[in-house]
Length: 397
Figure (cartoon, rainbow, N blue to C red):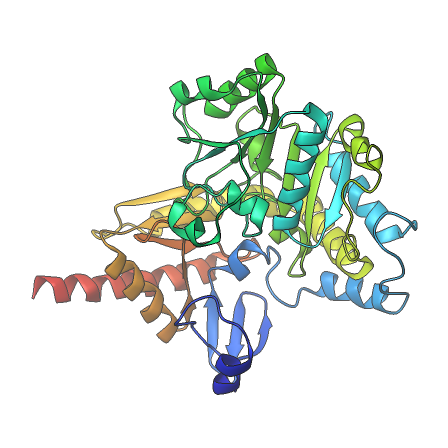
């Protein structure tokens, strides 16, 4: 099957990991050789409840027996989407009350950028260097990493880039700026958290200039940082909130949320300001609703901070220079890209799934399911420490 995978399915890199998957359950993924892998990545933060969760399976099966796609987005009243958006509104601060459901986080970014332009009548967008918001043309335009986008230019005009956490750069935000778009915690750059009340200062500058603030919570959202959404740590409410990944519980979803006043602008002048066939798909909305219910009604969110402490306690090693991030969105910072690569690849050989970050080659991602147990954390951290011991021993010889 590996040869057919490489021949018929388009790839994103010259050397995919190419593990042949049999099934997955809880915190484990199993290959076709019946080998078990402890999952410290959770589909790149997309499976907050792990694999094969019984409540998600039940919700999907119930909806499967009723109906699948019946009409393009926003025309028919479909209970899973209504209940999902209602629950989101319940757990979000004012004025974030109305949600547009999409097929992916990237599509939600596109919708958010369009909404900002429509609402302000301005064209200038400010984003952060080393930001990642997706890979479609609009989202790529606000990606702060030229190497990944130079082959696809020209992209959107009127984009300016600032440094995340750099206060003097906030002077670039003016009354010509439609929106500032930031990740609440920078993901691809190395899990950089806001410092020195940075997001509050961005919020104030946006208020002064009539600029909308878009916060991208595609990675930090849905409980991963120890709050339902990362911005709750930083006393900063965005005008438009974007989420995706973990919201679907393992199925593809995106969403952008704003005030009713803002969101209603997409209905008219022009009509059909943002449209999608499959956004809000009933099967996916049912999975997302069950995911959000489980995360908000259980103790998973407070437990996330306890599990973060355990990771930080166990992962003390001469080769680990720093552990960045918050909650169960953590990145090990290593001395070199070579050591990071060796750790990821050797961990897979030893039955532990780790992964890289997009733009920081010395980082290794740890974003396990929120449901991971303390015993599983200890098991995985022991594998990491032993591999790093072996790497260190080779260096010393």
